[in-house]
Amino acid sequence: MAGIFVGFWALVAAYFEDIPRSQTILELRSATDSKASVVVDEATGQDTELPTFLSSPSTPSPSPIDESFRAQLSLITRSQWGVIACMCWFAMLCFFIMSSWEANLPVFGAAAANLHWSPFAAGNFIALGGITCFPFLLANLLAAR
Image (spheres, rainbow, N blue to C red):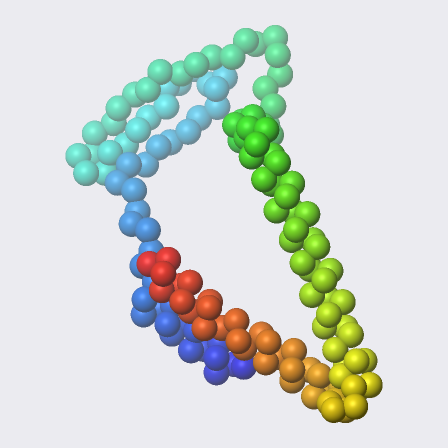
């Protein structure tokens, strides 16, 4: 299994292309800061000032993590929430179905008249199922390029 893992990472190193780095670096500052944000363009080396939007001083500003998380959640529509709920439900369902299937393989494999599996043989059958997924993972890796 370790050899397969090393082979997988060799294929990743050979065929995977990383996303190129952005040429512009944006320096962010707090919304209550009176200074303007500065954008540094690495290609020309020039600084460009952007306007700052001040918040009202009477309201305490939430932490940046809470603020960005709320902003991301506010962009999700009702139909997207439905898709998220369905994906979570079916992922949970598949997890429990696969877990019960794997737990029952040694029991029913040993009880079947034509199999007579030991726990080791049942584990090998489960591993065989995992190995059969490997070509699909490689195909997905190559297709994602």
